[in-house]
Length: 460
Figure 1: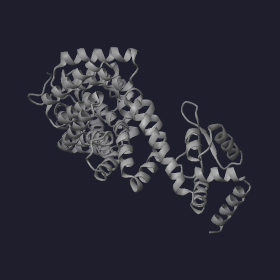
Figure 2: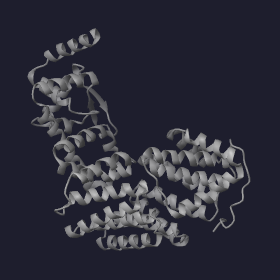
Figure 3: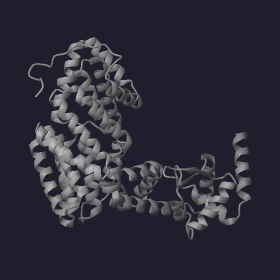
Figure 4: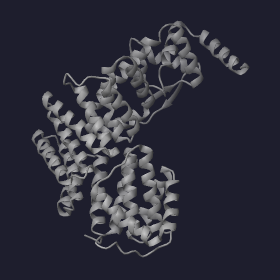
């Protein structure tokens, strides 16, 4: 207690040395969670302009009350030590300024989410990085909107649906989108509700709830058709296709993706045309239409040569790996899944990393390393569980049984159980590193067992 009182007395003394403007700014800055940018500080402190805010921030930095850091890209980012933040928060409440500051904070981050939503299709990776850095602030904004403004909450959650999916925050996204949709009426038809349905549907799809996802995506499609937004209509058709594919309706998914591609070709945006090709190629792979899949994959790779897009490039290498694995060329698939894994690390998509790790595991099984194969396969499944997803595609499950099932047969029940137990205990970081190394050099550490595919499961 004595140490706490001494610290508070020290902070109070430092605060008392500030002029009125500096005190006001320090109080307002306490609403930030996890730091802020100059633009955010200008909004939240209700300053006249950024020059005034910057001058005040620099004085607080000089007095060691604010810490300045360098974010990626060189933009300064500021933060309060937790003890200072708590002290400032108490003063903000005592001054009767907390509600106004929190609402300004919400306004700023709502506008940021809206900008990102509009821009997400061409700058997904960049905005994903921004939102990872602002994650705590976004959570604070969501909670305030949830308490005070249900429609704003829906707008925020719907605007973040793409981020929660792209950066593997399924559990968090499901919570907010479900709550926001439940707290607001279906009518009137509006963009906020359509966005919310789209985001919720995508997360449900990858959680393994394809039937529920389809209902939500149909609602989104109907709303966008009423609103006349062709780009969003195409994205909803794409979403229906994914729900169908993960629900075991491969041919129906192909039809939805083809309709999506036709609409994107009519609109004429090369970014969206490529996105539609990516989705359709996945279905061609699932249907074992390997020649068509190869041809479309070449189109995707040609696109990324002139339009750098690491998510699309990752998919291209992944599809080529799938084709090789289906054909039984495990040496080829091993290296290709490794290339795709490197790109999923860059874009920060842990779920997609899980798929690449499973691909590497199956390739290793086909090359005669059942121990490492089962270890990595179990580690990938454990990561899916941590992320709150349970993805299943019929062709992928068949491949897992073909290769990892053969690995279990080769090892026997006891050794298989030990290998999979070891895998489930691995951290995600260690799993990625192990899979990456294995894809580059093949397995050099585990015992090798020659395996024959199960009857009827040989190379296509």
